[in-house]
Amino acid sequence: MAKAGSQLLLSYDFPPMGGGIARWMGEMANRYPSGRLIVSTGQFGKGALQDEQFVNPVDRLPLPSSRLRSVPGIVRWSRRAEALARTHQVEFVWCGNLKPAAYPARWVKSRVGVPYGILLHGGDLLILRRQVSRSSTKRRAARSLLDSAALLVCNSDYTAALCRSVLGDLSLPAPHDRVHTVPLGADPNVFRPGLDPGEVRRRYRLDGRRWLLSVARLTRHKGIDVGIQVLAQLAREYPDLGYAVVGTGDDLRELESLGQGLGVSDRIRFLGQVPEIDLPEVYNSAEIYLGLSRVMTDRVEGFGISLAEASACGLPVIAGTSGGIPETVEDQVSGLLVNSEEVNRVTAAVRSLLNDRSLASKLGAKGRERVERYYNWDRVAVELARLGHGHGTQAQVRPLR
Image 1 (cartoon, rainbow, N blue to C red):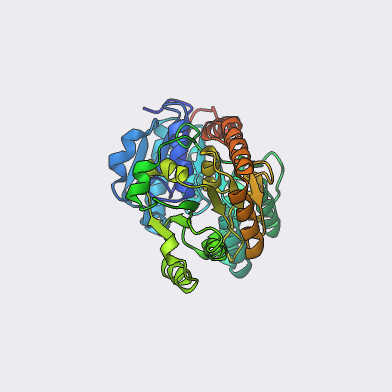
Image 2: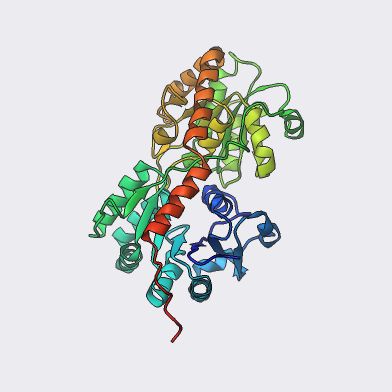
């Protein structure tokens, strides 16, 4: 049961849906104090059967999440959000993304008087910038949704700078008390070093090799193709080296063909969508984590949750220099940053950690320390709850007319 003065989270992305945004939203549902957050989302798979795992209540509309993007879906969501805000005397509304969640949030603000904040991720802002430059209708809609928000919260300083730039494109102010950075993190109690990966290694056919690892959608900007090229360059030098990739996406066949063409397909394991319960052991099966994302059309790594999870497991990270990655991985401290477009430089970085296990262990240990100290979900939830409370309203909710 939600308590008076609670906050409302409107999110299109929510477990069991995959992806970093859904992970973030699920962590909010579990990390807010019990009864201080209500989640409103759509139906996805068998999600309703898993909602009891969350500390805070999840209210699912009786329609698939995919329909929340339609006009009828937004109208139904708006009415439901208004009812939740009135019933639970909500003080603040969070939008898991700009579209579609900001539409029902703006509805709640106009009818109930509850302010809202938007969580921004990076790629969404690149898409928005392209859209508003081409469509006056989308420009007006974006101006309305962003201008009405009390808070714009970004997952990195990179995303915050991009946010301010987009606000400038829209001729909207960007005061510092409105645009905030809240870096994300991992759960150091779940993702930790020293786990026995034996059973997971057997199940996913990971026995007998030293593994490079990536956990990412199989899309071009994630740089999985670069990891495959690096593996090919190191194949003769390290006969037992392999590359494990967790994730699904449209580029699977293209990546499989690349591995075949380079003669390393027998060293690559595309593991698909690994259940979350297995992920910590999968990380513990690897020696080096590769996070080689790059900026491409409408795509950027605003933070990189998998980078934090790898660090939490004590893995040294080799990552690109684009987007918010340099904020997640501290170069020469918790990992090595390289231009992911330069395969030879990435190869040299991997070789250095394969040959210097002392350095690899030192980087992994420092990454673990950073997650324990700061880059964790408990800190994220505290910051968001504080921001929402500070910008929320304790005034009586306006009665129905």
